Amino acid sequence: MSASTNKRVVLAVTGGIAAYKSPDVVRRLRERGFEVRAVMTRAAREFVTPLTLQAVSGNPVHTALLDENAEAAMGHIELARWADTVLIAPATADCLAKLAHGIADDLLSTLCLATTAPLMAAPAMNQQMWEAPATRANVALLRERGVEFLGPGEGSQACGEVGPGRMLEPVDIANRVASRYNQDRLGGLSVMVTAGATREALDPVRFITNYSSGKMGYAVAAAAAEASAQVTLVSGPTALDGPFGVERVFVNSAREMFDAVMGRIRDNDIFVAAAAVSDYAPKKYADQKIKKDEDTMTLALVRTPDILAEVAALDDGPFTVGFAAETHDVERYARGKLSNKALDMIAANHVGIPGTGFGSDDNALSVYWAGGAEELELAPKTQLARQLIGILADRYREKHPAQDT
Image (tube, rainbow, N blue to C red; front, side, top):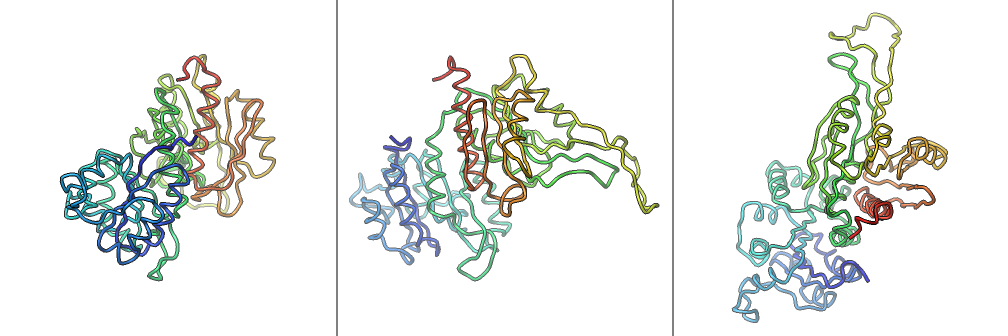
C-alpha cells in the first residue's frame, strides 16, 4: 500500500499558462494514492475549465469564496479542515504576493490563511518576474513561514524567453508531494551533513578549491529533515538557500570543516559526508598578494584532515555515509573507500558525464554497503536525495534494530 494512501490534497490552480499542466498534476497525484480536490481562481478558468479538473479528480471543483452548497456557505473553512496538504500549481507572482502579505480576497488566498495543512507552491512565471526583487522577497518570507517551494525549473518559456520560472513537470511535483508522506523514517534521530567545496587560501585574494556547488549535500540535508531528523548542515561557501528546518554552520577551509564536524559529531546518530573537501592545502599562507615575478611558481601543499576517516574511526561513532566522485572504475574505487575507511555506506557517481555531477541539478548514484548495492538512475538531485535517505534509513534500522519504531 502506498504511503500516501488516504491522504488528501487541495490543488489550487492560479491564472498562468502553466495551468494547462494542472489536470496532469491531478492525474499523477491520484496515481500515487491521493484524493484531490481542486480550487481555481477566476484567471485560472481562462486557461483550463473546471469541468476538466472535475473529470480527472472525480470531485467537484471549487471556485467561489462563499459557496451556498458548503457548510454555512463557508467553503474555504471546509477545504481548510479537509486538506492534509495544500498545493498551489501553478503559483503565479500575484498569488505569492498575496500569500506573503496576508491578502485574502478570493477562495484560494482565504483557504491558505485558514488552513493548518502544509503549503507547497510550484512557481510558474516569466523569468524576469521570478528574478524581480519583490518576488524574491516574497519567496524568502514565505520560506521562513514554512512554505515549501517546488522549483521553478529553467528553460524556454511561453513568452519566448529562457531562464528560471518554468513550472516543474507534473510527475516531479507529484513525487515531491508524495515524499512528504515518507516522513518519520528518521524520526528521533540527529543527522549531520557536510556539503559544498572548501577553500584553501594561498594569499588574501587567491585560494584552491573545486567545482562542487553543494547542491547534492543540500538536497540530502533537506531530505533528512523531511524524514523528521534533526539536521545540522556544515557547509562550505555557496549561494544556495538553506533548507527549511535545518541548522547551517558555515566554514571555508578543510580545517574549519574538520573542527566544526568533530566539535558536534558526538551529538549525531548519522553522518553524511557529501562535501568535496580539498585533499591538500598550501603549506604556507602569504600575508600579502603573491606577485607575478617569475614565469613559473612552485607551490608546496600539505594534506588536509580526513574528516570522513576520523568520524568513521570514532568509538561508538555515528552511522557513517561517504560520497565518492570518480572518473573511472567507480565501483572498485567506491568499494575500496567503503572498506578502507570502515564506512557503513557510500554513494558514488561517475563525474565527467554531461548534465550530471558538479554544478548540475541532476545526477545518478551507485550506492554500496557491505553485501549490497543499489543503482539510482539519473534524476534531479532533490529526488535522488530522498531515495538515498530511504536506503540510509533502511540500513540504519538494520544496524540498530532496537531503535526501530
